[in-house]
Length: 259
Image (cartoon, rainbow, N blue to C red; front, side, top):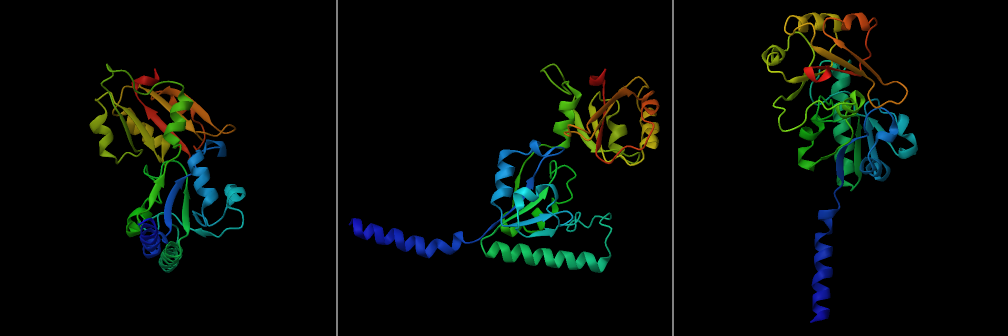
């Protein structure tokens, strides 16, 4: 009987082995700011992967983890038809085709494929479209520290807390065409703005919706030991404190919690 069970088990493994031959596609958040903000899970995923994608196709600061393994260009939201890819249509289509080929061939060969992303891929992440494009491969996200997490810590205060706090926190895009902002202006909710490109114009717009003594905080390069900066003011005084163009990596908080 034991011999017969062994034969069945061995036979099952042999028959089922092709099911386990497929690889794994993962979007791995390496965190934000300094490399030591990377989670252990993300570190292990990168260390164990066989094929890599990064936005520019270079190992960059992850070269010590990647070693000599192949790194390919993921571009910027190529499967989401974003208008800021800065690529010609022919180049974009070629990159899409090549990316599909590499991913599918690697997956069928049982390779671990990792797309390295920064911050939270699910919050305005340009590479999240890989999930839909390759949904038949059951891709997964390995989470990491987002700019929102790091910026909250930099502010050194609770942006919401306690059972008596009935306000909320809304993450949204910072521009004067965002109708959600005016809808929430009277709600006492904390608003966190990503990707404001025209700061002065945006502040002028906020001043039409909020009292000038409303608190505002800007966190620049959150998570970076050497570059992180926090600017705290009111909507009426913030322009006096921001005298130069802000870098792309910044978040803007507006709400009474800042006071």
